[in-house]
Image 1: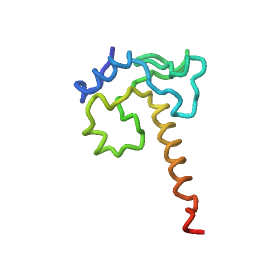
Image 2: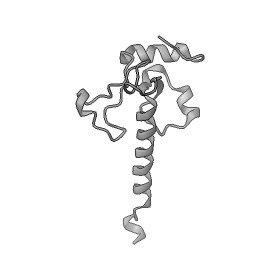
Image 3: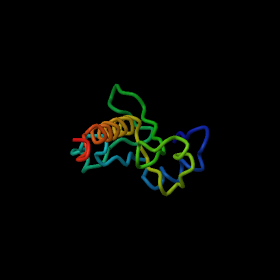
Image 4: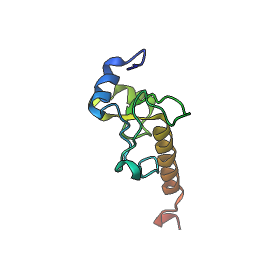
Length: 109
C-alpha cells in the first residue's frame, strides 16, 4: 500500500482508524446511498474501471479549517478523505457560510 512521502506518522493512524476508506458521510453533498451512507472509495483503489487511482488524505473533519490550524491538530481530530469528497465538502461549507453571512440580520432591516 502506498503512503505519502511526508507526515506518515500522522497519516497512517488516521487511515488505520478509517480502515483505509474515505470517512465522508454525505458532507460532500452526495448521500452515498449505495454504500450505506459512507463514501466507498478506498486508498489505492480506482474510481472506476478506467478511472484514476485514489489517494486518501488525512484532513480535519471541518473542511474549512485553515491549513495552519489543520497542521497543528492531533490525529484524533483528523479524518480520511478522498480528494473529491474533501473538495466538494469544502465547497458546500463555503457556500453555506456565505449564504448565512449574506442574509440580513434583524437589526439591519
